[in-house]
Image (cartoon, rainbow, N blue to C red; front, side, top):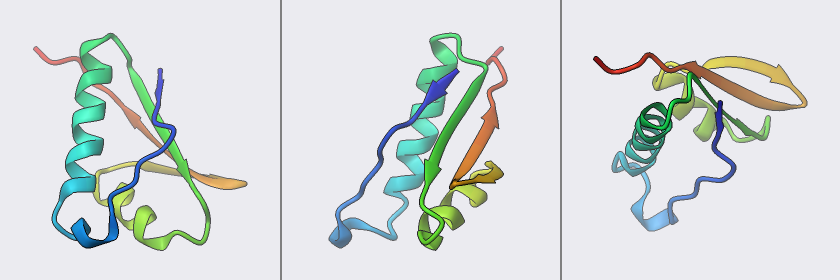
Length: 76
């Protein structure tokens, strides 16, 4: 299992797909290293981040902070 602790894109570079690509590449790296699950959390007030993670197929698990989970399928 891999947990992404913190992700931030400077405001002047947002809305360019950088955050999406960082998460996608982080999941690929986790998969390559043998992880089968990937997760991160964000505050309940951070609707922009929640939209990003939902658009990437994250399964939302609200408890305290909002958590998103992904099952990582091995590459063939």
